[in-house]
Image (cartoon, rainbow, N blue to C red; front, side):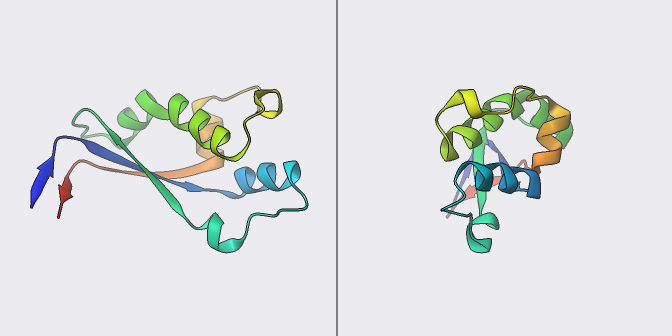
Length: 100
């Protein structure tokens, strides 16, 4: 086993993100199974405070999640603040990442 010199941020969708995605593609609604999936981002740095960690990376993560579902930036929400990020996503931060 190896310890990876990274922290991990795990993102899950909340209902506002799911609603936004479904409004863009009414013929292809996000299934409950897909809505429950999580995405994990490996980031540099040790963070003893989850909010400090997520505040450093939330803009990149927000845009990555939007682009992963819809590439036309014209349809993205205009305001992508940390407050809105917290409305659209839940997250967890892990300081220890182990490669089995």
